[in-house]
Length: 242
Ligand SMILES: Nc1nc2c(ncn2[C@@H]2O[C@H](COP(=O)(O)OP(=O)(O)OP(=O)(O)O)[C@@H](O)[C@H]2O)c(=O)[nH]1
Ligand SMILES: [Mg+2]
Image (cartoon, rainbow, N blue to C red):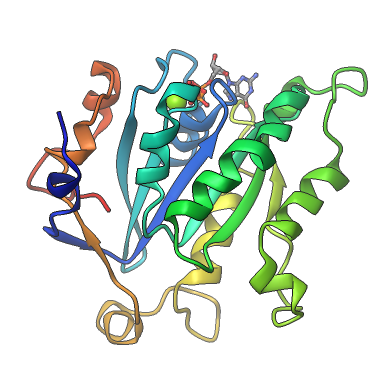
């Protein structure tokens, strides 16, 4: 059993913490796997608790937390939102209830734990299955959710240059999957004038808010299924969590 103290012990550093939340079976784990491996995996088991992944993007260490959508894990998901600077909020485009649940359940959870100006990216999933007959959430509604969920970025007009963080994706075809993550990294991490991640030492000096990572042997294994544990980076190497 993981205690909060164990889970917050700083061991390693990540430059950015990203969390993904949303109802069960909307495709959160599949989206992450598609991004990390470039392949669609249809054999993933339901996430129990949460799973942790570390991604290297240029000089940066990105901590990605995949949470469980089942309602009984809501408290845990809120915990894993702590210190997140970006939250992917996922819903199934063909399932209205999963979209309504972003407003009703997941946004309040996020607001309890994440950074105050946490970047929210609305992500509609399973675009490959959508036909005009099966679509239950419009493009405009997804975009409006993203706009509403980022008041400090859009509603006060400070970042008019920023694209509204909303994508419709398919983990089967890969459509827009990379774009979700690239948007997050390019919005939140320092870039050179060409828009590439800046070289490691300069980036370290310029990155103002490095996030503490915890010990993956503690928090990272919180209630995970064995399959998810197998997917974690090996302990003592690149693994960590925040
Ligand atoms: N056709 C299609 N199926 C998908 C897509 N993404 C996920 N799925 C399927 O949807 C089901 C649920 O996917 P998961 O990734 O396990 O869902 P989850 O959101 O992680 O669910 P929890 O772990 O319970 O919170 C699986 O059968 C996936 O293969 C997609 O883009 N297209
Ligand atoms: Mg999952």
